[in-house]
Every structure is written in structure tokens, then in C-alpha cells.
Picture 1: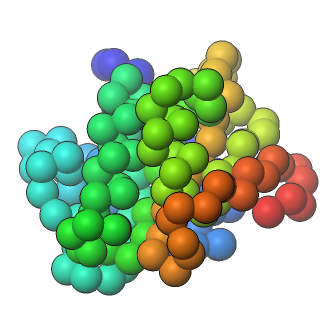
Picture 2: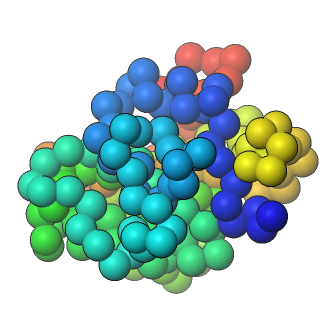
Length: 163
């Protein structure tokens, strides 16, 4: 099983869903979805609308094509206006050109996550330790001016109280 399909762990989901209300999981399987409504790989979340004008999307995409998922979130919120916001989980690759062009330009909030997330292997249902990359949660929403620089915060999501 490719690590591109690994799931959001329950402890991280508990933390983040206490802070945001999600209406759709845009990159999930029936087994991995975190929301009642989800978009499966067969439906292709990069090709279909994420909503119908409002709501907040959860996105734990394959990290190998992160830019496409961030661009899709921006499109769904600011151009098509299919949703009002999205949270996109991914590697903290702040030096990448796409990060500067997409995240820095459109995201009002970026959470740099600590500790590193142990994603769940869908074949075993168990978290896999040893994640060697830092993660970030990028929050996009229409309520803020998307042209301002992001508010970047360290988020001690486990064993801490930072927001």
C-alpha cells in the first residue's frame, strides 16, 4: 500500500475537529473519511466541485501532488465559491516555489504542527511512527483578505495548548 493513501490519525482528527467543523472530506476512501460526505479517489477531488456554496472542506491529500490540492482549494473557495473554507494537511515545505505562490498568497493561517504526525496505514489500521517530515495545516477561507501574508503559528497539537 502506498504511503500516499495513509490516513489522518484519530488523535490529530480529534484535536483539529474540535476547532473546525468540516462538511466534506475531499480526498478520502470510505474507510478513511472523516466526514459523512466525502469525495473518493474514483470521483477525483481535483476534478469535481467540493460543495455548493458554503461549508468547510477537510483535505489530507497525497503529498506528492500537494500543489495541485492547494490550488484546487484556492479555486473552490475564491473563484468557483463552491465552499467557504478548507483545511489542507501536508508537508511543511515553506521553501518551495509553489508554497510561496499559493499558500503565502492565499492562506490566512498556517499551522506548523508539532509533534510530527504518525499517519495510519490503511492496510493495518495502525499508526506508523517514523515520519521524517514536518507537517503543516493550511487554513483557507473567504472571511479574510486572501492577499495578506499568512499568520504562521507553531501548533503543539499533542501534549500542548498552542492554537
